Length: 183
Ligand code: ZN
Image (cartoon, rainbow, N blue to C red; front, side, top):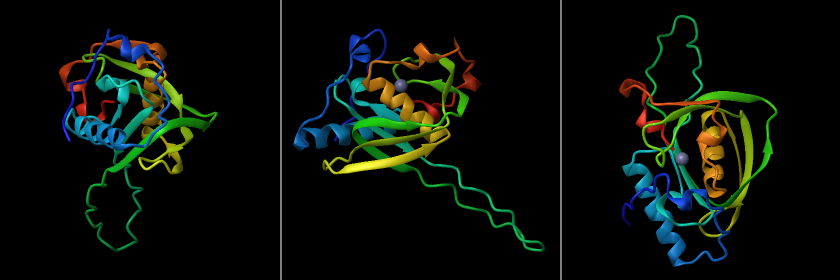
């Protein structure tokens, strides 16, 4: 496994529609391992193959969904909960098959567009289908920030960047940037 360089604008690979993966071979396994390592090193919560100069339809996402906080019963002290564990998702040939009508606006950044963030409206919930790294079909449903990450990554394999969708884009002040949330 190795960390590969992250491609930034104006590299044309970021604007190309990536190819469908046809073979779940050793090369694909190496690509996925390198993508996971590169995403973690960045650090980021998602990465699409074109971001490391590979025009193939592969995305990785690693994100800890915030736990739902249950109020402590009357008279009991609240127990400190451990931080939520990040979950790793690897999707080959992902497709968004269903999107909620409900939208949500959030602030996004991108590892391939350093130094800029933007306000982007996304579907609150999406359902995806695709394949896992072994080529078995998989489906998943994501809501909120996780749904936003998946929409951002699927955009990447279609050559679409968050700046295309943003209502406004700006250079954030250093304290405004949360690198852990960059995709
Ligand atoms: Zn991105």
